[in-house]
Each structure stands twice: as C-alpha cells, then as structure tokens.
Amino acid sequence: MSSRQIYFDNNATTPLHPEVKKELVAAMEMFGNPSSMHAFGREARANVEDARHRVASFMGANESEIVFTGSGSEANNTVLSLFVCGSGQCFPGMRPKIVTSRIEHPCILETSECLVHRGVDVSYLEVDGYGKVDIDQLEAQLKAGGVGLVSVMMANNEIGTIQDIASISALAHQYGALMHTDAVQAFGKVPVDVNQLGVDFLTISGHKIYGPKGIGALYVRKGTPYCPFIRGGHQEKGRRAGTENTLGIMGLAMAVDMRKAEMESEAERLLGLKEVLRKGIEERIDEALFNGHPTDSVPNTLNVSFPGAEGESILLYLDLAGIAVSTGSACASGSLDPSHVLLATGVDAERAHGSIRISMGRATTLEEVEYMLDVLPGVIERIRNMSTAYIKA
Amino acid sequence: MLQSGEWAYTEKLKEHFESPKNILKGNDTSAFDGVGMEGNLQCGDQMMVAIKVDKENEKIIDCQWKTYGCASAIASTSILSEMVKGMTLDQAFNISPKEVAKELGGLPENKIHCSVLGDKALRAAINDYFIRNGMNDRVQKVQARTVCQCMNVTDHDIEEAVLEGARTFYELQEHTKISTVCGLCKEDAEAELQKYVHLHFGA
Image (cartoon, rainbow over all chains, first blue to last red; front, side):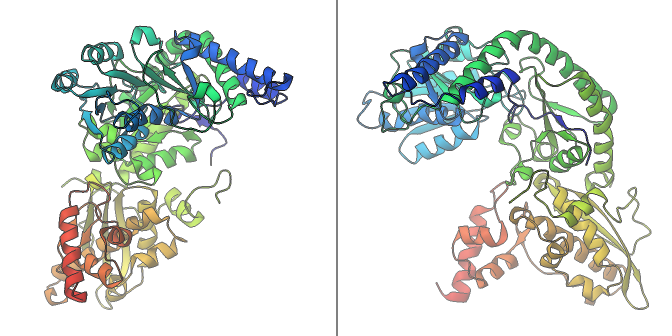
C-alpha cells in the first residue's frame, strides 16, 4: 500500500471544508431544540433560519422556499411521492404521469419503479452519446398529455454531462407540467439559480459540497403542490417532520458560503486540471475512450474507458498506489450490472465494465494529477497484459 | 466488520491480486498441450487457461492463464493455476469452485461466480488436451445448454439448483446468480425451472 493518499472520488463525497469543520465544532456547544420557545431553543432556531437564508440566497430562492431534508435522496423521494397523493385525494387534479430520464440517480429511478406499482405512469427519456436528454422525445411525451412532472438531473454524477434545464423546464411548463431537477452534482460546481432554470423543485446535498453528510435541501417554488414525505411534526412548517439536524443545517450553510466564495475560481482551476488529465491519458494510454459531454460538463469530472481492462481491477490497483477513483463497472459495488448511465449513452457493456470516474475537488493539485498520469498507464498496461481481451485471434 | 484500511477481500486474495502467479506472457499458446476459454467480455469476466501435461503420468506440469475481470477473477485464476500443478488430469477436472474459493480464504457472496469460470476454463483446457491427443472418448463434455450467457449458467445448473431446493425464480437466482446481469434469459430460465420442478417433484 502506498503512503500517498490521493482522492479522486469527490462525486461520491467530499471532505469537510475547514471552515465547515470549524463551524460544526463551534456549533456543538449549541444543543437547543429549534422548536423550543426558551433561550436555548431560540438560539438554535435563529441559527437554522439564518442558514436557510444563506442556502436560499445562493440559488436565488426565498428562504420560505427551502425545506431541509436528511439527504438529496430524501428530497428526490419527496418530490416523486407527491404523485402518491396526486393519484389520491390531496391533489385530485394532479396529472398522473412522470417523465424522467434513463440516467437519473437510483433514488429517482427506483422510486419511479415503485410508483409504477402504485398506479403512476412513468416514462424515461433516452439520452444521446454524450448523455444529453432527447428534447424531441420530451416534447412528444408532453404533447401526448397527462404529464404532471418532468424530473431531469442537472449534472450527471457518473459522466458529468450538464443538461439544458432552462429549456427543459420551459417546455414542461408550456404543457402544464411541474419541473424538478436533481442538482446534487451541479450545485456548487456551476451556477444554479432557480429562477434562471425556471424549476419548481430543486434538490441539493451537503456532503457533495464539502459540507456534512446527512443533510440535504429541497427548493419548492412558492405555490407549488407539495406533500410531506416524513410526517408527524410541525417542523419545516409541516413540510418535513423530525427535529431539525441543526448541526448539519449550519454546516450546509457554511459549505454554501464557501462555494459562493470559491466556486468560480475553482471551476476554472479544475477545468485546467481536467484538460491536463484528459490530454495526458490520451497521450500515454492507447485506446482511451472518454465518456460524457466534452464541454457541457461539470469541471471536476472525467469518465474514461480502457478496453481490455476491467474497472474494479483498475480501481484496486490504483488503490494500492494510493489513488482513489470509482468505476462504471458496478461489479465493484456489489451489483454485477454495468453502469446504467454508460449503457444509456450507447456504450456497450464491455466498455462500461472497463471505465473509471475521476472526480477532482478543491484539494486536488496539479502534482496529484501528474502522479495519476505516472501511475495509470502502468496499471492499464499491467491489467491488459493479463487480459483475455488483448489476446489476438 | 471491516477495519479502517482493510479490503473487502481476504489477505490471500489480495496477495494473488497484487502478485498474480503464472500469467501467460504474450498471446502465444502453441507451447501448451491444452487451452480452454470461458466467459464473456460483455458480462465482465473472461478466463483462459493453458496447460502443459506430462504425458507419462497425465500430470499437469504447468498452468498459465489470462483473465479479463475483477480482483476476485484475477486472484481465482492465479490460485487455481497454483493448485493444479502436480495434479493428474482427473483430479484437476474435478476441482470445484468451492475449493478455489476456500483456497482464497473465501469470497464475498457476489463474487462466487468469479471462481466458477476459472474451473470451467480449466476443464475446457483438459478436454482440449484429450482432443489433441486423440482421446475423444475421454472428453467429459457436459452436454449442457447455456441458458444465462452472462453468468454462464446451464440447464444442468438449474436442475442441480432445483434438486437442492430452489422452487421459485428468486431461489434459483440465489443458487446460481442466473439472470442477474442483462436479464435477457429470465423467461427461458423460468421455463427451465418449471420443467425441472415438474420432472423431479411433479409440481
């Protein structure tokens, strides 16, 4: 095992920003329940509401439009679960159909599958070779009628491709559908403004932006139909029961503040590093195939396939050299299916099995990228040398 | 529970992944007496085994391999290549995936299939040896039909699973991992399951 530890898996999660860590340590002294009326409670409430204001303002929202959740997945589930009510008594006028895409996060795809069994009609938009959703197909779905919600992620977690959410949103509204975007992988990496995007719901998560795990937020445009996913308390104005995760909320707000200060310069720096990485891989490794959109992509993410080399083996040989990446071959994660995202972009299963995702972050340096470029070619060559995929007929 | 810094795999497996033994260098297998290949790149695992045989006593004197696959697949073929050296062809033919997994100190449940392909490739290499040496009568080809291409599950495997107690498709999957990758064989697999349940248990 190498003594070096280089982290190229920031799309999975990010380390705490030092300022967030400081905030959390200081906040640990404050234990009051935000719902309590005494001084301890009032202090906690003030902190929660201050955090709500900071989170809201970074996305152009009003603080009353922010609901704190336990995760991005919970926020996404909350939006889709609206349709359980939609087909019931709460919103009798709700149109019974959801349109989403083939490359969404499992928390959207699996919830959609579940809703199908509860009588909700769900259809999935195809994507092109770069992972962009098929707008014509969306329009056809909307024209056919009955669509109550369009849910398309803003940036894909595996390949980084960014969708044109403003256009998708305008189209959805033109046909009377609500618009949700899972912005977990976009928020804090590229500008996210709910008004420019024109969305009704938007999801973010704390631990993808150097904040704590276990905290997310859902933007809900004022006046939009809404149904609590977790019931049983008056917290979050009755929109999400459960005592607020005060520490997490304060940490999220500090993470957002730090993104506000660093995002623009970081985006430029990471784009530069990504280009060094891409060119270096191209020059040093035969048949490296890049996945995702070459330009409409978050600045930190590079997804690449190496024919003849299987993803988990690449991941683990890199791990032995002290480098952490993730793989599009879900074999490593316990499931045997190749990545649904890569398959949806038209990549065949073999290529999908042999792909890795390199996701950089604010701690990534040029020196780390160069170390990666020194190590990776040897790893790929080593795996290919023992691979049946490189045996000529 | 995994400790900090620990892999999900055993130390033995890690050792064979870090320093695999007996990898075939280059692509030339002409110096070998038998070659077998199993698996499918689309499914994420493919293994090739090449053997040299002492014809006097039918003992395997060298075994080299190539593998496209995960750490578990690489380590399984590596350790298999060590295990079979010195064995007679009959002994080697009967190595089971369970024995390979045991030598590795165990495999995670979802990686068992990785050890299955290695012994199948070895059997194919042994059969290849018999064919090359005009001993077609000794070829132990299992006349099985592959139902699941991805997980290399045959109708015989399904029958065995039924005999071991599988009655539902879910139980069949638990036994064989059938239809857990592309899923295209599900209908066929269900039909085979019903056939053997009916055949053996009249249901």
